[in-house]
Length: 262
Image (cartoon, rainbow, N blue to C red; front, top):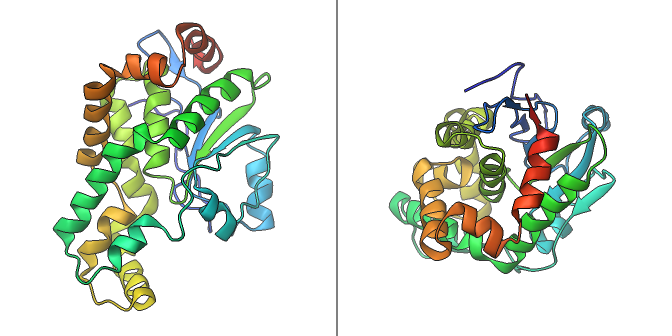
């Protein structure tokens, strides 16, 4: 794994903000740092944090959240190009609906998250968002940067960042390591007891802390479920990019020219 400056960016109210550039590319050179960022939502960002984000030169933001999420937690960050989609609206967050069942244990929560990752790459609104990210990132001027976010910046964001890394020739080992970095960036082990107490109080339950771990952090088996499903349904990640997302060879080459430093 290559890192030329600190990858994790310190924000008080924004979870999981980090630079996902800097990795070696099989096409030669390294993915540029300071050009690709990922994070959770920005609804609670302070004025100082917004100024810090503005200084990063972000031109394109792919906000992967559902419209109900965007309505409830309105983003305070508004770069020139913001990619959203009105598909997938829910009356409440699917994982919260799951957690309010009669009884849930850690194994059930773990299985729920695996099933989510199986479905996520083939949801129509995700596919539209993913494609628009690649198109708008290629169109961004000069040295402009891009940002991918969702609510927590780990699941939907994790899949799209992995696809971006694949286009840019990042090794599977580095793609997986970057995905797992969420657990460090969020401080899952440290935050889990407090978060579990908060959610238990909110939904009137007394679940053990481990029930909430899948919703706080990431696990490679979730990642593997998403990409094994992509391979099974589309034939390969490359075929998924071209045939499902319509991110063709020319667009991929354009992205590599912009984002890989020899």
